[in-house]
Image (cartoon, rainbow, N blue to C red; front, side, top):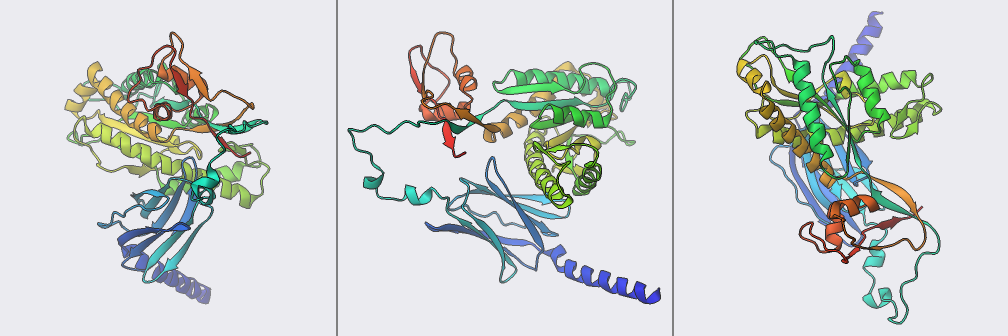
Length: 447
């Protein structure tokens, strides 16, 4: 027994020794260079690092999580198909995101010297055609480009589905302020106003987990979001603390530990329940494949959650001092849906007499809802969800404006992004006229 314990201690010390250097690593630089064949990004640290990576699409991204590292002052410059480099603090390290302009033919990561990670992105398959001499690409003037003779798959924008979760309700009043204001009532008021603001924007479908003073179990709130096919779940609360001087707003996403526990919970119950993860049933998958599907789905959801939370936090900062100036992580149950980006907003401290008075004001609650809506709209303005649909051969690529049309209704009717429609027609605003011919920016994708 003593020998076994010594062996266990030796293994633990070895692991700690291997892990130790990574805890103090700092990113020194993020250099990008590009050629016609590929783009390379070199991430240099001042100490050895441990890392893992994964790819996301819609939009295309490469995400690298580096254990125990910090950003330091490095920013990084984009090149080639890398449109932007982003950095964010994780609970146990640093996340580096490469936003790509297009899907590369291949991606590889390798350890470099000294203490570097080299990311190699081959050029997209279309680049060879794009770089061909113009004479090869030009069609004879007398022959129009052939129309497709068979249906094609077309990527079109779809409505953004947001599920708003006013915290507490019914028998659960939540926190109660010094003068008796209840958190459940504040959350419901802000939730209703947020729903109204988002629905006023074209392309949003919104649902509340509760629209009255009723109690909804936490797991049921997650179920509502997943059954609605939500692109975002927003849980609204008001903070409280024993010290009444505590004040300000905070925004939370799921902690890595909370994600891991939910991952294990879903795997354990997959034999009895057909859980959908990103639209895929894991019930009939073997354990390894089910674990991979869950991991991919959770990583994508967490990446989006952090991005949305950062934008919402920035909007909340315009209302007053923040309680926490960075996105926080916690294991809240309502954040644990594995395939729905989820955030929890602590709007203010209801235990603080001044902030309780503000939360009791309908005008201030409207300002909070407007700040939340601004952050949400900002994210989906950039990352509009899309779906592939089959378009018959000869489908219209142009549309003639009729009486009663608006640019937003046309965009929604044909399932295209409003910004893409403006760009395709060189429009600076939303003014259109009857009889005007608009190009429809529908792009085809291979089946």
